[in-house]
Amino acid sequence: MGAIKWTRKILAAVFYATAGIATANWLDYGLTENYGWRTVMRIALVGSALLGIACLMSLFNLRYGVLLGSVALCLSWFYFGPLAMYIPWNRLIWFITIQYHGAEQAAALFFLLAATIFTLTQRRYWSKPNSGIEGMG
Image (tube, rainbow, N blue to C red; front, side, top):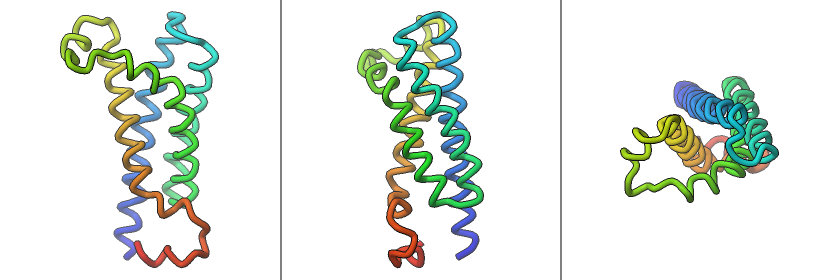
């Protein structure tokens, strides 16, 4: 039981760390080059910072790490959601190679999507701690 719990904690930390670093990397470039709405990008940057905090928090308390990760992902998708709609997904290789920072954009979206899927699979931690579902996994 303890090994499974630690595996989930480490997985959460890895997902949140990679998403936080990838999104912060893209936002650093985007804010420097005035690429997009600055206010929305700053909100997403707060989400990236919260992903880093969720990474650390999930190692100590998985429930609070997942909850903070959920909030951080919502803040990050506020910018990256509309951005994802404008990427030509049918020509992704062309997009990555032709655009100067296309690989960073695609990586940020991929890791953000992976962290979102992981968080949705951990939704059992969103409920109250005394609801009787801790023993389930």
